Amino acid sequence: MSVPAVQIAAQVVRWQAEHGRNALPWQNTRDPYRVWLSEIMLQQTQVATVLDYYARFLERFPDVRALAAAPQDDVLALWSGLGYYSRARNLHRCAQIVVSAHGGAFPRTVAELAVLPGIGRSTAGAIAAFCFGVRAPILDANVRRVLTRVLGFGADLAQAANERALWDLAEALLPQGDLDRTMPRYTQGLMDLGAGICLPRNPHCMLCPLQQACVARRQGNAEDYPVRTRRLKRSAQAWWLLLRQDDAGRLWLARRPPAGIWAGLYCPPVYGSREELEEALAPEGARGAHDTQDLPTFTHVLTHRDLHLHPVLARGQAPAPSCAEPAAAGWFTPGQWQGMGLPAPVRKLLDAL
Image 1 (tube, rainbow, N blue to C red):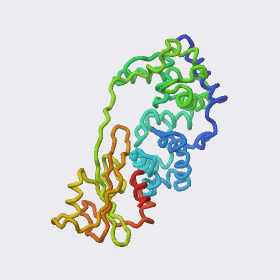
Image 2 (cartoon, helix red, strand yellow):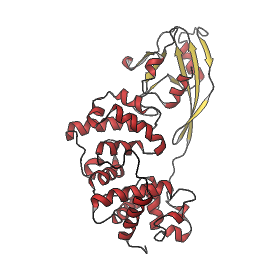
Image 3 (cartoon, helix red, strand yellow):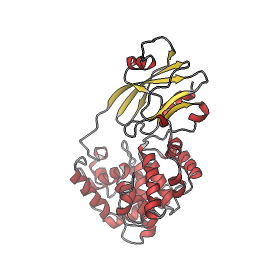
Image 4 (cartoon, rainbow, N blue to C red):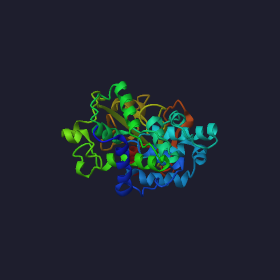
């Protein structure tokens, strides 16, 4: 590396102050609750999407104690549409642990933060750097891309040893002094570079403050970094959704299992085929007793899976489907389901009825 590490840190800090993002609602604060909330919401989610959710969460749960005391259903309902719902469940559980085990104050060390639900080393580093000026690296997807390009780090990150080596290099690049000022700037600067300059495709190298230090730019192969050979294969699955609507206009909804797709959210009963759905409608063979309507099929894209959803509306008074947890299922009016934790495609489907 032709440019010293201390100079790289200084360049990032200086660039961030002049050209980085400095007016986001979770910036210019040292409140760990607000920083933590933003970091969890921003995992695999664009800033523009997070802005409204962040404001609504703070209005409903202004501090960690309010979040910890809330029912999980309220948290999931407010999270509905943001996706990756395990984040919301971990958020709630983390708040409860911070209150019960830490007296409502977030730990100040990376080691203590990283063991809390849903945080991990990179998010812990961000919280520690932003709130406490701790000299701690982060390696989210954007920062990983920036650093592998700058360093020319071509080792396969699918191997744990190489991932650990990159962590060590990221730590070596951190600012050395005036950490209370430089660590928040440096950490945010790397995030800003990854989000707006060092893009996965067609990076804006001429605008980058690290262009002189960047190995990938000199090689002319920035898009070859980072290297990761093991990729998760995409799969597809077909679900039939039974929208049972009684004479009063209520719908039968049940909580999904605690693990898997849409875990813990409310959803119409799901079946693997139209035949299974028909059996559920007429378990004793009395087919044709319900007024059914096939609604348009649509596809919901998850990170590594495509869900082909086949909604079927069944109107008419009908016995409630069996449920292993009766308290977690029931008939709900439109006014009730608006405030429930529903998957985004289900909410859109119900709103259109």
